Length: 540
Ligand code: F6P
Image (cartoon, rainbow, N blue to C red; front, side, top):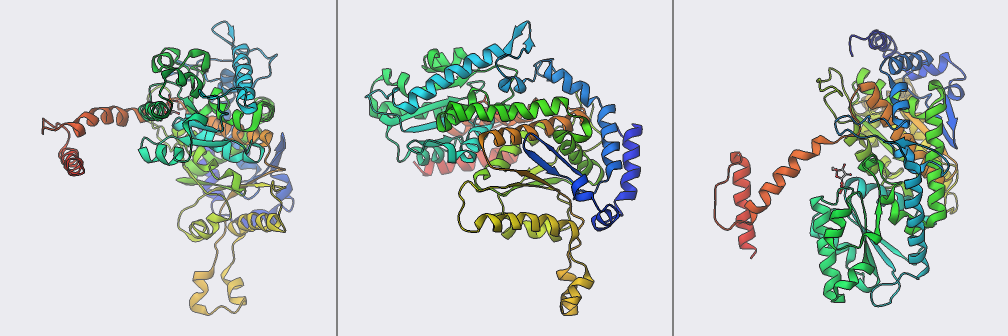
């Protein structure tokens, strides 16, 4: 990669541009704040506060072309098996394709299957929401608990919190993911099994955490309801594995399927979104899907220089590989998006946290950054100090809405003023002369200087609707795609999670053993296992 002329051109360009302050870039280009923007499907991206010029964007696009980003994008949309290490197509875009579209995989139009499942989900959601579907004892279902982990949890919980304003408030939604029993106990502590429906969400239906929680839920239900027949009214499954669902005791009539071409972290708009649909209803869910689809169409067709996911993805590459930025902050100025950074962590890091290319060669450049964040303005009173004055360059994505879903006094203006102020302060800072001119004592001047030159994107949407959420999630999905395509890695596998899973399965019986047996781990792990065994013994 480093030998590519396009890469070398960017290195040379970086050597020059890294000496230039954003203040100078703005001074040299008076219209920059309007020119370095792009807008599509209700989403406005201001990328003018990036340490980049039109030349930078041009050079990054040349790199993207040289790395085959457009060909890989076409291959994804065409249903080719671009997840080569797992031999799978990558077709989350088919999950939101309109009914009349055709996307073929192995001679089958997968869009038909997608809509068949969506229709079944809608029928089920209507029955539960209306009270027609009751629990085993005839009581209305008022509590929905999604049991899943990773992509089978983070998307559903994020979407539920994000779209709470559109949800049926007569129902309570809980999400159990952690194998720590506290998660199950606390989530269900106020729920009555007679009124509770569990959605067991697991693509594989074999994930240890999810199956442990599912079995606990089953026992919790049966303890009160006493009758195996109750399971059919209180458990449904979302999975690709019908056999395992049946073996668990869930009638496959109450199973909502998806396909191996949907990656876990790309599945929130598959049947994994059943809890979302139960919360907001099929109509709002369809609006969310149309937001996703609108961004898919934009990503597929817009010229690269006006293509939002391409611009975002290439900026991420620019900072990661040429400025050495190790992390990126995502800062939504909307309380409803409180779990959006957590959702993005799996999307970005499980996708692009890879050190070998598609053909197995070790990369000689940096890949995926660490993503993190909190909703504004809370982060401002916590970690923003470091973004402003720390020694690391942390590119930020600010996400803001024109309208609040809960307008109250001047809260929204104050919120908006804060997001704009943060982006301005990061970019332009405050010089020593400006600090002195305020009468600051000389010994404090250095402390009160803001160097500025700290980059950010500002993403503006009108209002947090289901449609808007769909566009926003698809924006990041495709930005991740662009980054992975430039880096030449498989953004759709996750081999890095395997080893820990295997070792945990080996350690469980070792922890539970009463005799000292032969522990054959390293001396640290052996000693820790013994210590936990002793504590287990003491605890009874
Ligand atoms: O953490 C690994 C992983 O495979 C994720 O990719 C996935 O989202 C999660 O586990 C849950 O998997 P499943 O839906 O099969 O239970």
